[in-house]
Image (cartoon, rainbow, N blue to C red):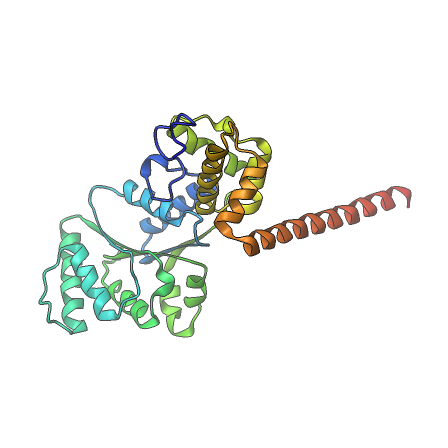
Length: 303
């Protein structure tokens, strides 16, 4: 709707995962480095957690791109599966043939282990990536751990990347999963973007779409950070709606008022008001702490 109005060649704030718009902040790069390091170790599991919309999928897609050509990957996007269903899905992803009437864990496990051994003999690494892993049942996670038992004297023949929300951390603290938790060689919790990173993020996406980053005023970007909390998915939704409103009103710039208006449409009154309260609380606490420190410093000077 607003593309031609702002001289854009594409929608810069679509929430669809378009690799052309990949923005790797320092936090995303650090997360990627942790995962890459973990896959080079011999523990079997690496883990990436973060709140909804912080960019975990961005990191996982970049990880897939960076894997060497001698790597076969299996990606599971819907982990709400039983142990049998999970093993069947792994077989599908790795191209393993099986009888669809099979309901034996042993048969599936043997087929997968044979595939892992064949891949290793051929110099092929095997990586299993599971998104939304916080939904995995404990018995399914235990089955995954058993798959990683196949190893040489130097390395595991299957490496598993678990990607999920913070609840995944709580899940792995359960007593029955302590053996799996001990095999996690690298873990990283992805935090939202900082204020400076939000500015760079918006500019990057506009530039990819041949747009002008200066259409967002500095106050609009500040509001965008405050309301979104630095979460990329929310940033995209707010920017898209703010630009739609600007087009409707024939405004040349995205201002603070347009971002606030967009936030009420996208997030609703309750969420926006709650985030504004949280912001003022942080400001109050920060000012209170600062005043205490200044008081101590001044008091020390006159003591």
